[in-house]
Image 1 (cartoon, rainbow, N blue to C red):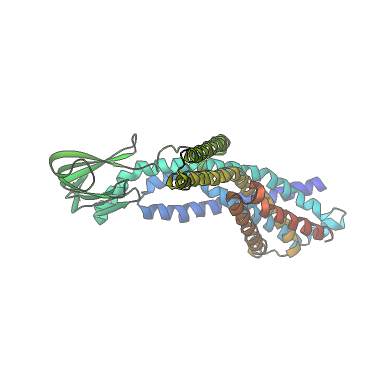
Image 2: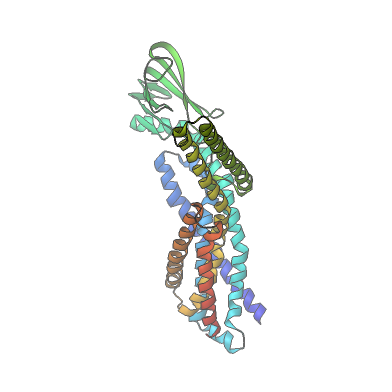
Length: 397
């Protein structure tokens, strides 16, 4: 009998989970992501190309909520229909009914961690690649419809008109790396993307350049100008990437490399201080050079703390799925209501508020180096403690 009940409950949970996950993920993709991408200028074909890459980004957030929803639906209905009381009457502990949900969440949680890592290592680079490939079409689409296009990569294009792929009297403003602005006007021109060098090529005829360095003034004939797209779409260097953008496999080696950089900076500070003492230049110890090295050490230590915290954060967020189910199953049984959304609201809102408040507290303190990295499990630990209390009440159901 217990094994039959276990299979029945597990089947109900999985059925509701699959349907709800499909619906919620589709809702996130079509409404949240699709509308935003269309507003930014991507065409429907580009949005379809993005869907496989955006899928893990969406599912890493939808899976924990969907697992909690499935568990709340099943156990809330069972309690409301008297099935829990019936099972207890035949000598089966109500805690046995929770076992399928616990096993389900324990299997699902590592998958959420894998989804989170897949979103970083495959999803985000794939999104960047699709957007890069569509940048030329996006620019022409805006220029056709609005005669103007402003890019987040530091350039703006205004045209009088567009004839096919030919830009009539384009005026381009490019922000240089030094903070200045280069202004270019021409009789006509065209755009072409070179994805190999992450550069937008602007071919113009009879142009005039103001600002910047190099070619300035009137340039007759055909000229090619290169608009670099920065590092947004390049393979990120682990030494300069944010820890949240690194796959788990790269965080360990990068932590070792960052520790080495911190030690080198400390050695530079020691050498600078010693040289200043030997040369009797006391004011240079706390001068601009010394302050720059100290700032470098501080930034390096801060990044090292974030690198140490990041793996703990991803595993804690992945196993939030387990903790949500651990709290949701007994709470739904105690609520005794067959209304799915009422049960889900009773379980989800308090769990969400408590968990994420404690999670963010632990994460902020850990990445600042004030608390150890495992402090990000604070929210999970509190939910487990709450779940133990609720299960004790279920045992005395």
